[in-house]
Amino acid sequence: MKNPKTNVSKAVVATLLIGIGAAPLVRAQQKVTGGLLSAADYIEIQQLVARYSYAVDTHADNGYAYADLFTTDGTFGNTKGREALAQLARTTQKDRGGPAYTRHFLTNVIIYPTPEGARGSQYLMALDVSEGGKPSSIVHGGRYDDVYVKTPAGWRFKSRQLYPAKIGVPPPTAKLPPSTRR
Amino acid sequence: MRYRILATGVTLGLVALVAVQARQTRTGDSTAVMALTAMDYIQIKQLVNRYAFALDTASRNGYDYADLFSRDGVFDSNTRGRVQGRDQLAALARGDKKGPLYVNHYIMNHLIEPTADGAVGRQYLINISHDQNIPSVGPNPNQWDLVGQKRGSLDTVGGHYEDVYTKTPEGWRFRSRRFVPSKSGPDPASATMLKTYPVRPDPTDTMPTVPGGLSAMDYIEIERLVASYGHALDSGYGTTDNGEAYAGLYTADATFGQSTGYAQLERTAAGTAVRSPLSDQSRHRAVCRASHRQTVSGRRRHARTRGESQRHTGVDIPRRAL
Image (cartoon, rainbow over the protein chains, first blue to last red):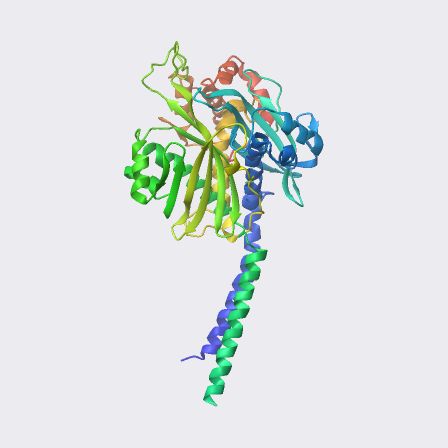
């Protein structure tokens, strides 16, 4: 029978070696599969995008919940800066809104890394959801094209532009997302 | 002597116990929220996606739906009231049963906030009624309008869900799920915006927990592949290079519906049996163009000459999953 103490130290050494060996492997794999964004980055940007609808529909925090999803120099269309964005959120659908109001339905959320951070797009379906038994209807729809930046407070919209849905061939609006696996 | 050792042991034990408790209280105060990993977010999102499938199909006699809830899980809505218990939840799902191909619950905007003992979340819901008994008109089966009738329409039911999730040994489950219909004006019960927290990095981000399983990054990339479908098909991500962008989502031996491989896809999409004697590269483009004839923008593109289309192929087009 071997000295159990030796076995323990062997196990410790082995664990340490495996740990040291595995660390660069993990990093290498992240680099290959994740491009410039980690899994956490993707999830955090998805959550930012989801928050957008709640912020704009609830008018929460007098519009500042919406404004604070953007960087300090962030833009939505031609609207730039915190005050202007909060004002926009307060006054958009002025009489329709509140904590249980749902209008901005987003789907097809794509996110891809860029050297500056990330870009992404979603489809918007703006609904007038039934109140008082009348039928619901689609008010308008289109696509958002975004630029995201990671700030010390988390991911934020640097710019967000809504392109209303159109039939035909308008000038290109977005750059094709590059493949993450090369 | 023996008593002294015993007394010392007991005292030490007590001190240790107090210390542990004090520490627990401290950690309870400072880290009331357990940050979630990417895989936690993904599994909670999958739970919610499964909800729509389980409810609309009532698969396994409603028990697929019931098993999305924890043992003490509750569903609550303005129309159904409070439903608790596995059999009761299964009965709820069966009551909605329209068959394995029924599609009704469209759920979007999933927001998740970590809490001290799990997570809470919200999503938007719109119900869409599809009625295959109303005949379609015209040569295009997607044209739903018939005088005074539509094959699909938005339901009166729309609003948001408010969830509490708990991580059980079987995975994330609904502890409670409440549906709140959309309405303007104050709603004290939904008044607080959910908070955001950083996602906790974890080895499962890039490495599956079980052999042959998926990592968080795998889920994210598959999710993006699926989300890319509409963008690629409709507009080529806004570049109008939709043909190549769309085909780039498929493998060379891919299947869409009855068609397997580019050649079949091409034939089906173009609606003609004529095989194109094109090189792989050109055929690839031709198939993309052909499949786009099914869409409105595709039909317009169809009018363009091949030369015009090829002018757009210089863009860095993703050949692999996006």
